[in-house]
Length: 421
Image 1 (cartoon, rainbow, N blue to C red):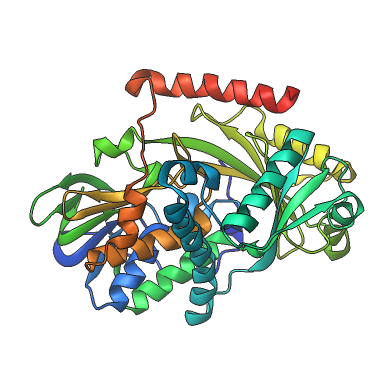
Image 2 (spheres, rainbow, N blue to C red; image 1 turned 30 degrees about the vertical axis):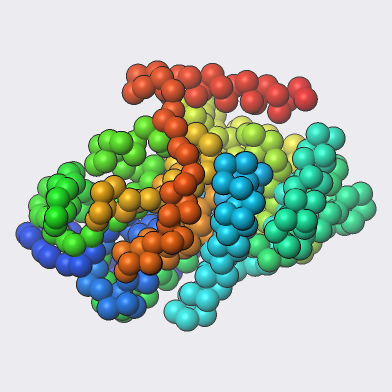
C-alpha cells in the first residue's frame, strides 16, 4: 500500500531505538498506538516506570492510518450495550465515551499537540430505513443519556453537504476530527517527556506469564509487575484466548489532489466529518490543505480489494459528482480490530496482564479512555474496567480455518442489504 497523506504531512518525530538486552520496569506495554501511549501517559504521571514496545514505528498501525473521526459512543449501537448491561451501566459507558472525546482536548492543550482538530460530525441517511434508525437513536440519546444532537434534513443538510445522496443526518457538534498520526506522535512526545522509555522495531514474540510477566522480543526482554497488551489487530499469538474475540478488517482511504479552499468548502461548508450508516459505509472530511479525505470499501478477507483506486474514485463521485475527473493523490489502508458484537473488549488476564481491543473502527476517542481505565485498574481502581468486563464477547464462529470465509460471506449479505433495502 502506498504512503498515506498522514505520513507525508506528519510532524518531525525522533526515532526510538530497538530493544537490546534485559530490562525491568513497573509496567511494560505492547503497542505504540493511541491505546498504549494513553496508558503510558497516565501511569507515568502517577510515578510508574513504564517501557513501551512497538513492532514498527510509533503510529504505524491503525492509530496513524484511520479516518480520524473522534465520536461519542462505541463501535456498536448504545442500545446493544443497554440490552446487555441495563440502562444504569449503559449510561456509565456512554458518559465515559464522551470523556474520551474530552480527553483529546485536554491532552492537545496540556501537551501542545498540533493535530488539526475540527468540530462537528454527522451520521447521514441514504434511505428511509436510515432515517428511522437515526431518529430512534436521537430519541434514545436525548431521553436516556441527556446528550444533545440535532436532526438536519432537506435544505438545511444540503446547504452544508451539497450531495443528493443524503436525505437526513444526525449532527453532533461535540464530536469532530483530527490528523490521527500527528495526534499519536504528540502523545509519544508527551510520554517520553514524562519518562516513558519507548522502543521501536521491537516486535514482541512471546509473553511469559507469572508473578513477574515478561515480554520477549528477538533481541531482548522486559520484565514487569504488569503488562498491557495494546496491539489490537496487528498482534496474534501473544495471548491466544484474545485472538478469537477479534478479527482484522481492512479499511481504505483516499486523498484527492488539492482542491483549493473555495472548492473544498463547497463540499463540506462547516468543515465537519461525515459518515453514512450503511454496513459498508463511506466517510469523508476535509484536510488542512483543502483535500477531500474519503474512506470506506472495507475488506473482510484481509486482501486489498482489486482496483482499489478506481473503486474509491467511483464511490467518491457517487457522493460528489462534481469531483469527476479529480484524481486521488494518495490511497492507503490498514486494519481495524472488530469484535463480534462491535462492543469494546477490555479487561485483564489473571492479576497482572491487561488488554484493550475490539475498538471496531471507533477508536480515536475510545483508545484514550481505554488507556485511562487500564491505568486506573493497575493502580488499584478497577471499578470502571469491571463495568467493561461485564460485556459478553463470543469468539468468531468457524475456528482458525473458517472464521474469515464465514465473515466474508456474512458481510456480502450485509452489503447486498445496503444495495437493495
